[in-house]
Length: 330
Image (cartoon, rainbow, N blue to C red; front, side, top):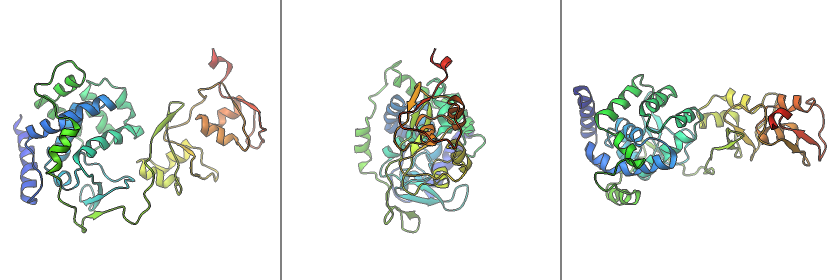
């Protein structure tokens, strides 16, 4: 371990030690022994290198000893961003910022995977080789995971100095574990008697008294990521929840000109494409050109051009609309 990293980790430990009097504490070895198994399982399920997940946990939570980790089980510094569960207010880039609070550390590890998987700006990371931890570290920094300009450098140093790539190799079946890995069930049992103390009323907000929305699931259509609109959704609320700009939601879904979001509508998180997956669409009762454009993930102008239509024209039931050109079907 370098002298600089040693002082960094010592600072984390002393800060927590002096500010908190109760709750579970970890050594770095204990942290890896406890959470390497779930990191490997999440790697196999979601394609996030175990080395990266563990390095982020070490850096973001002071290997499980930060106030946020001990009082809110939040090991990855993930802020609320539309979160419907318990929260914890804490000074970060700004005073009293809202962070997610979990019932267990396992939930934090799993939510971290979902957080990366469901944000389109992290999508390029999943095109990298699973062993490319340097690419992942730099990609996380480019995508804005943290504001520290040396975030990637810190992750890479932690991975190298603690040999965390061995957990990637175990996950890929290239080497056997040196000791039996703790299963998620075993971790839950281990942590059962080490639950974080309750968050005080002065620093916490809950979803009590508010309507709990259904779980937001990000899916793919025509190789474009999308969500389904809930009651009350607006471009502004979706942009805030998905950490995007309002203009992106408006432009990607062609909401200019007074179109509004309705419950059940497909809302794209990336630009729609020039053509569809299928060759054609048969118009159904009540469908509009915009409905068909959203259904197949095709920009309106290409749908109009391909079918020699104008926006003012009315569709008829049974009408056949081309979603691809002839050359596209060859």
